[in-house]
Image (cartoon, rainbow, N blue to C red; front, side, top):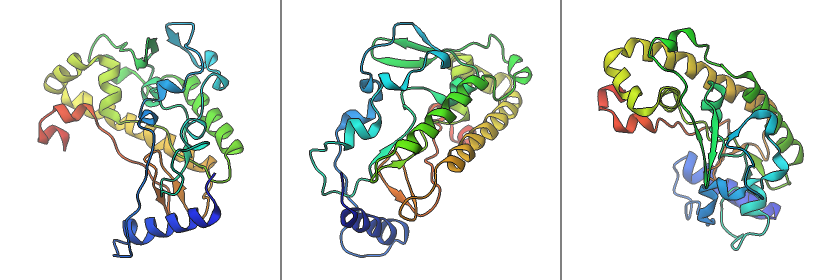
Length: 242
């Protein structure tokens, strides 16, 4: 566990050097086990079913980020902000949009379920309220049990394009951009509203600690923070990305 003095010094570096962009000694530096980017390794035992459902979710079968990376770190004099988040192996946004959460050896992945582009207009953004409720319960649990030096971060949520590609399958999604980009645009707007609602929910449950918030990238922020992702759009042209 990091001491109060260590945390205060790291927070000062993040504020002055990162956020305020002032030259104030060295920048924040972090050292971490790279397996933290493979949260499937947090499993204490593999799931017994090929599809994970909210009712099957048992948090005791998975280590938290803090348990895995920060409870007994090899290096503790760095500036990395200890964190925990709802298990990042679950594709939370895609699951809330209605995608089945499938398990295979070594990974969890969303399955596509919409056969046609026109199905998008008929589908509400939050198609699976059970996964949304599951994310809320897990966030509440983590916030209530967080160690003194641990910040509760939003989980990986990705972005509307990633959710749409999961719902339709990537090959179909790329065709949809040409066949019906107006439909994609409307659906992306609704999913973006869901994404913002998930973030609002998170920050309504997680209060500031030491004057700010933590993130799964290991940084401290003076206000609510998120890193925007649109991974699938990296394979699209700049105009579509914009």
